[in-house]
Length: 262
Image 1 (tube, rainbow, N blue to C red):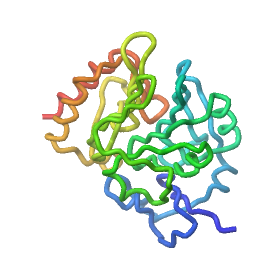
Image 2: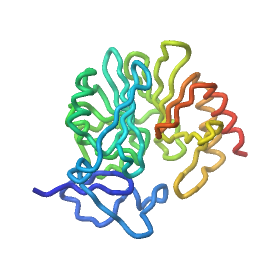
Image 3: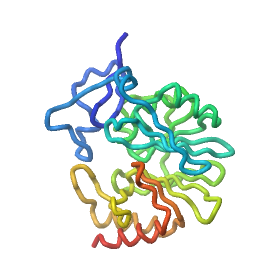
């Protein structure tokens, strides 16, 4: 049986019929092809060497990561909500244990993804849980494995249910987004992927056109991001790597970080 190719650098899954020799995601200057060339793997190989590690972040938030780290190493976050669960971002492995865990929590009502580097094997996830994938229309050219589960959104906001909102922020990609959630304690929670990248010191955020290639954004784009984030109140933020949980004055730190761009 033919096996789909998966890019070993970014984790994007291509259809079986794909005959190309390069990853369209990594060829873009926001990502990269390794100096020793394009490498491919498969779902069979990944599941032999890796597993999905699940960690509880809050009563309604669960982190899913591929262990040991594979490709970019991003996490997905399962948002458990009364009217339907949402998967934020995608990881390139879906095993039986993970399917069982999510089904125990009520399955998935939707998948939302911050930007194309995490499109990953989203088609597998959507078909397994029979749910739509919400993607911005601005990034259609980065979909390498089309699916009838994809629903494109055109405006700057998608209202889901239970107060959950998907908001276009821009920057890294035109459609780079955050997921805004209610917080039972105080204000709200932001899931940001790498729309914002939290430093190891936990004291600064960066926003770049390309993180791996260190390509900055235009100042006018930073200004637009500042305007959008000024109107969003939140007291917790969760980024794309497991250490990126900022629960102390995240908005203050984000806005001060954006002010440094002049």
